[in-house]
Image (tube, rainbow, N blue to C red; front, side):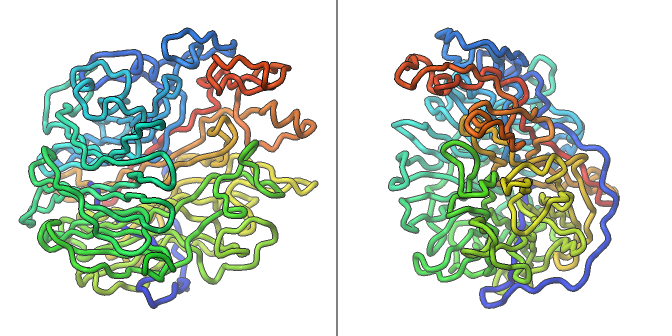
Length: 634
């Protein structure tokens, strides 16, 4: 069930964040979590197969040079089932809580010149998963795939999943081409309620029905228009006059001068049609979320930026509709805060090659702020809840290097916050950290919150277990004896949770991921930079219906535990054998020739003089996965 929350650092536009003066002992962490992307076979939505489905389920890898077979596969020696996955989303079927659906950015088709949305289906409450792909990918030969309006686009991502009360599944996201015509689109696909089984094993619990493009625009440059960062929610309140309405919001980036806007669209016919998007934001904005209260009121929130477009506060704003999304009131400020923004000289992606940053050359992924919003549609917990991560004001100190994470020249600790409104978003309580953990510090990031059945669950990732943690350094970094940035090992980042019955007081439940991982492995940009996606997800459902004791949550996160580390010969050769520990397994052949001598008929990734590209991309060096965990609430 998708009801979201925003974790933040302040409660209202004029109030500063206050540190919490207490701590709550954490419960023992669970010992079991589940691989949502399990490096196994893929099943097409109709039970058939094609080159892409076979490739995504193929475990083969071969370190031999690519022979450029001419079949559209840029890496003919490898399969694709150990490629990256990130930015998970999760929903639980209210008509059958054993059915859990997940989505993620899936890179298994990268060798086929595509990046698409992966979908996972579980019929045992998220303990085991069957992986598939949203119809419409470039090599989709199914009847539905060929008819999809996404056909002709090379990439799809930013996945969203949500159910209505009748068990219909809605899958939303973005789709585009990386070359002209870009055709940047936001869309929602519909899967039928309570269908018969599909696929060779009879495990796919939902039948694909249609895809609808909500808006299309875009040019591949910052000066153009691009659709991004969507969110979706469905009205599941049985007390609402707008039950089963589907709501969708997104950011339309219009150049790089603060002219981006939040758009909103709705469907009142189960995703068959969507109204034209309307602007609901003001000022300079990015990212949105949607919450629906028990009475059917709809809230849309977004991140605001100071000094651009008339809004003078860095923080979070919200707008309310009392007529099912037909019209909205004026935006209000939820909170003002200093966002956690790890960067060196403004660069938020630091690694090797073209992404190397100023000394001591830290390596770290971008950690963007994606504030969230939620409400308990059962009405058991009244109000609307917002969550985000931000800098604890009491932790800010001057930076000792070029690295900054707070305002320019300063660093600080990131905490996940929650604030509450019980008067239609007119006023908000003082934001509180969900788990201040003063004796066990770490940077908290990628928070999400859900509310349902009288309970709230917040999840986030942080690096409290890293013995090398310092507010002065990014995640997973330490300095060697020569002052150079090196990996602090694998015991860096884990996923944590907390629960509440009112959104004001929180009880930490400890670690929910079974192991920790290094988030800064360089798996992207030709193995030069790390990337963890932009968010994680949690959903709550009732497994017992009218009977007591059935509430549970399912959380999903991006996880690098299965990534195989290695050495990058380009780096070790250039730096006299220096190994920083951030590199992954890769098989490169020294070409020993100048750039002018490289065969340009070979894909550029494989003509990276003086070395080839990575010839064993399916060998484990890119094995970033989605993991999930069940959290019992009763």
